[in-house]
Length: 181
Image (tube, rainbow, N blue to C red; front, side, top):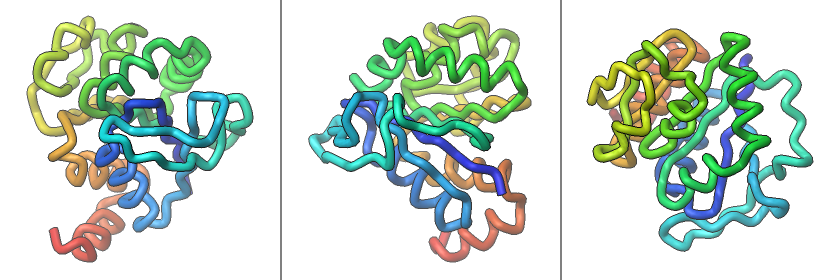
């Protein structure tokens, strides 16, 4: 089973991060939450504090197949300012491994040149940050190893697409039915 690392920065969008973790874990997909800070405690955009599984400096990325960047502001901006994270995301994508971002977080991928010529979507108003992308405006866009989502109200669609991409259509169907979607 593919392993996932989901990154948390202060100001992250709680629904996008925790909803995605929840749905992936319902599918039996191992998810590690990683604080980009030097402490496990991370506070979201709506003042909900969570405890990440690990911190970026302590994280073990061997065997991690999928990287997920939740949005939210200033969370996405904080992700975009973390050079070690951006290096990891770029290396991961260049190896053909899956990189997913939702809401404002696709700005990180755009800034790294990872969206050049690829379909992508984001929260309305951030389209200019998707440098080189074919902006779709879709709820979720998948182009090869890049998965992007539009925003918090679409977290179920985003996370279920990840489930299908990682574990197959049958796994998605099971999770979807269990969630009454």
